[in-house]
Image 1 (cartoon, rainbow, N blue to C red):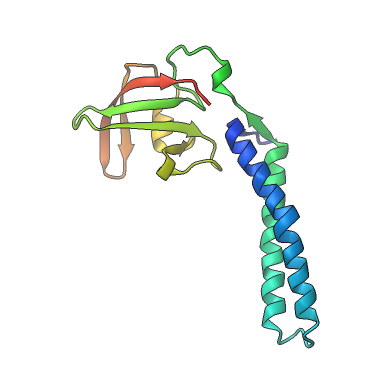
Image 2: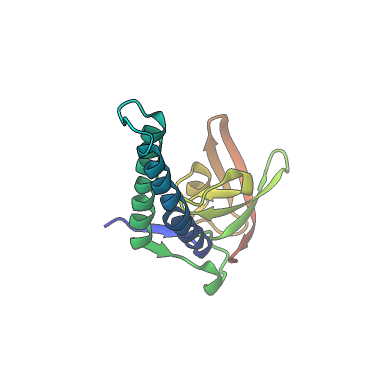
Length: 159
């Protein structure tokens, strides 16, 4: 059985999406299908086919979320002692050794990742390069643009 590592925030977000899909979107789709059926011939009824397609996407997403939630492994680093080691769920500040550019990332599960919010997937190249390293370590991250050297300047165990 595959375990899905996720932060508590990520689990709450998925549960919220599941609630929205089941209690808001699903009833709207059912109503759309019923309304489209009333228009007669289903073979040439674009509204009906669009609503059925939307229903398929909705049901698929519901199944996907339910499967992940049934196999989720919630990791709350705020309950762990901060020993300076980078692990899943930590917030890490790194500095580019060459340019002194600083960036802070939180390492999260695949479903939570959002680079615009500096949430990086545990399976991303940067996260894989950081996991297991310690505060003040220098690391080299291989990127599509070449290798970049970073120094870990801050490791936080926060929610």
